[in-house]
Image (cartoon, rainbow, N blue to C red):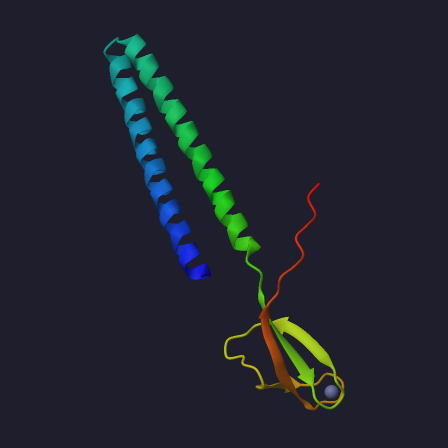
Length: 134
Ligand SMILES: [Zn+2]
């Protein structure tokens, strides 16, 4: 479910990126043309092209930063997967980040209290309570 969702977002963002870079390229072309027209003495056309170029560059950089920020926020919002390890002897419980190769009922590291081998009892995605927004 999350896989298809992330695929959709990457497709959309790459499409947005394409548009941004096209706008950027066109704006730069406008700026280059502006200098050419300026050299020819066509100051009015040069001025318009300069304006279009600057607006284009500003707009594309703005959208680029907005998209980047949204993508960063999306990445942060994914809760981490955690592994719960329990000691069968003394009941000591420890929660740590999921590591590759973890599975339920796998023997983990020795207990911090009694040095007995601990057992992985749960692997789950940690869902934190969302910060209350006013
Ligand atoms: Zn123990």
